[in-house]
Length: 343
Image (cartoon, rainbow, N blue to C red):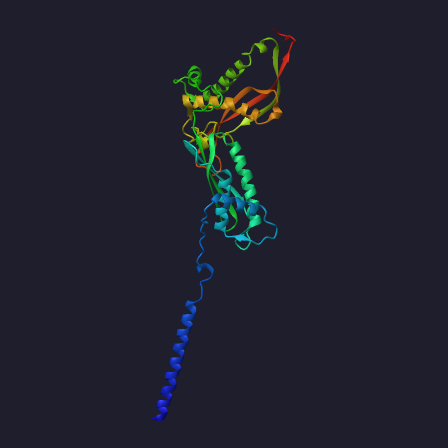
C-alpha cells in the first residue's frame, strides 16, 4: 500500500514538472518578436517641422555633401519622400491658374544597401532626376506651364518612379496657319463633299496644298522679286506618327500630329474635312520646327512635301494601323543676278 502511494506521488510530480515546463515555454514564445515575412514593416512618418523650407534646404545640402563611405541610410519610403519633397522644393509651383493637367512618369534606378538607400546614392539619383526634369520642362510646348506636383516611389529592387504633374493653360493653337484665318484657308482648299481616302485623295491633297501654300510664300517679298532665287537640294526628312506628339491633344492615335488611326481590313479609312485641316496645319509646321531646333541648318528651307499612306499590323496590336508618313525635301536658298536660260 505504501509502495502504491509512493509511485502515485512520483507520477504527480512528473506531470506537474511537464506542465510547468510547457507553461514557461509558452510564455517564452509569446515574448519573441516576429521575424521574416511575419515582421511588421515600420511605417515612415513624414517629419513634422515648423519651417519646411529650411528643413528641405538643409537636407539637400546634407545629401549633396555626403562623403563616400557615409553609412547614413534611409528606408525606401523615407528616401522616396525626400526625393519627392526636395524635387517639389526645387521645381514645384502650384499657386498658379491653369485649365489642364499633363502627367508624365520618369524612371531611374538607385543602388540599395541591405534594403536601404545610402545618402550618397540618394544624391546620385536626385542629380539624374534634376537633369530629366529640366529636360522635360524645356521640351513641353505648353502655355503657362508649371510643375504642380512631383511624386516619387522606390521598389525593393531599386526602381525609382517619378510622377510629374504639370499644369498649363490651354489656348487655341495652330502650328503654321494664322489662327484667325485657319478656317478660311480650310474652306478654300477642302470640300465637305470630297472623299479623302487616307492613302489616296487625302494624302495627295495634303501634299499638293502644302506645296502650293508654302511655294507662294517665297515670292511675297519685293526683295525676292529683284533677283532670281533658286534652290539647291540638301536633305530629305521623314516625319512619322510615333515621334511627333501634340501636347494639346489631337484626333489621332497617341495624340500624334500625323494621321494615324486603328481600323480593320474591310473598311477604308477616310479623313474628314476637319482632319484634313488639322493635318495641313501640322504638316506645314513640322519642317520649320525641325529647322529651328538645329541652328546648323542655316538658310535651308522646306521646298517639297510628299504625304504617303500606309497600313500595318504592328506587334502586340489586334487591329491594323492606318497612317501617314510625311517626307519633306529641304534646300538651300540661293540668290543670283544671272538670268535663267529659259525666261
